[in-house]
Structures are given as structure tokens and as C-alpha cells.
Image (cartoon, rainbow, N blue to C red):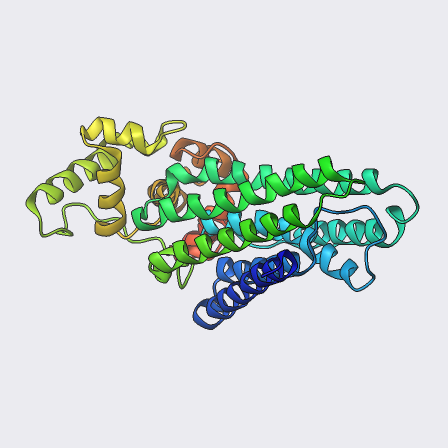
Length: 353
């Protein structure tokens, strides 16, 4: 088999796997934002598999330009995908679409105007620096959010998916910057196509090993009710730990502490972090540690807002007393749980009284 035929086979395999992955995500989890973004990312990666080349020494074929632009814009989708993958409450905003449109438009302009005007290296360098920037944002999101993920079976899979995609994308961006304006040859192109096929296969395999409901929650995580002393575990040891955890939350109100982590809580209970994650997830029904903490904070805030003796206490004071660091996150978390803002909740309780 010639190098050209081998490269074509690798590209075709990548496209086929990506299209199957996109179709599977849309079919099984069409109502889940993370899955929809994952499907869009897969389609953008398919455009990359069709159009990508390390060899950027001449004018890009006109039909390649839209595919290359979509491939570049896919890195914005990759960043949004990682945000939604690690934050079940993440929502798209209009400016996310604007960022995607600007990046895609610049990449298209680079293909049809900037590079052909004699500025190949400039065009390739700027586009790939943008790519590297969004990869850095995605990896940063992964690092920041990973400790609060309580679903053990998806923790390693999520990190693997993000890291292998970031590694491939980052290496390709660096290689294209280095090779801009130079002919790299068929061997390098074939190796690159093979690396892409292996990366795609690894991602698909990793996603198949994790239960879809763990990776993509069917609905945004509800706030499970806070219960004290109610049997929620059959195992006596687990029940004892849950009782101790609930005493920390109810009596000491440990959730008020600034920057409280699951490691600190596990230390207080004298158990490994992985066991505490499993208890909070499997026994109490939470998928995210911050949501677990915020639910307790909001319960305290609800009681204060409904208390007639605290009618003159500012909402910000109640929020910070409960453990929130600022008003914005408190308002968003409160409305996600109750469906109304703190001020509306206080008014409703006053009127009901």
C-alpha cells in the first residue's frame, strides 16, 4: 500500500469513527448539553481529519477553507465541551457563539486572504496560537474541576479524553507552526493521519468503557434533600460515616469554611477521599462536591430568608454567613435549587405569613 493510500485510510477511519460517535451522542443524549457539544466537537474533528495538513506552503484549495475554518473553531467547542463535561450546571451564553464565530472567521480569512497574500507563516502561527490558547483553557478547566467530581467511574475517563485530545491538538499546532512554509513530505503526513486515527480510537474506546449516564447526566443534577439520621445505607460502616458527615454539616456547619475541600472533609472523618466521594455520590445522590456544599448553604439561607426576625438583614450578609463568597454565585445557586431569586423567596415567605 502506498503512503498516499495509507494516509487516506487513516483519515477515512477517523472520519467514520467520529461520525459514529456524533450520531451515538445525539441519539442517546440529545437533551444533554455536554453530549450535544461532544457531538459538535466530533463533527469538527471530522472536518479536521478531512482537511488537516502539516504542509502549508501554497494556496489552500478553496473547498478546504471552510473545513479548516470549522476545524479551528472546533477548539472553541472543545473548550466549551470540557466546561460542560465537568460542570453539570454549565449553560451556553451568546458570547460563546460570538467567540466561535470570530475564531472561525479569522481562520477562513487566513486561508483565502492572509496566507495567499504572502503571509503564510503569520497566518499559520496566529491560528495555531489561538488553538493552543483554547487547549490551555480546556486543560485548565479539567485541572480545576476534577477534584469536585464525585462520580468515580467518569473521573479517569474524563481526564483521559481531555488530555489525549489536548495532547494531539497541541502537538499538531506546534508542528504546523514549525513547518509553516516548508514542505514536510508524505511520510510526516501519513504519521500525522495515523496519530489522529489512534487518538480518535482511544477516545471512542474510553467513552465506551464508561456508562453513558455517568458521563452525561440525563438531566441537570437536582439538589437531593438534606436528611439527618435517616437510613440511607445498608452497610453499617457507611451509615456510621454518613451520620458523622451529617453532624459535621448540621452541628459544626463546616460548609461555611472558606475553600473547604473534599480532602479537608475526608481528613475530619479520617477516611480516604475516594471513599468520601463514593459515599456522597452513591449514598446521598450528588455528582459534584460543590453542589453538595451549596445545598447545605442554601438550606441555611432559606431558613434565614424566611425568618421574620431577619427581615432587615441584607441578602449578601445571609449569603456570606452561609459560606458563599459573593452574591452572584449565591443568586445563581439559589435560583437553580428553588426556582426563584433570594429576594423573591423572602417576599413569598413574608406574604405567606
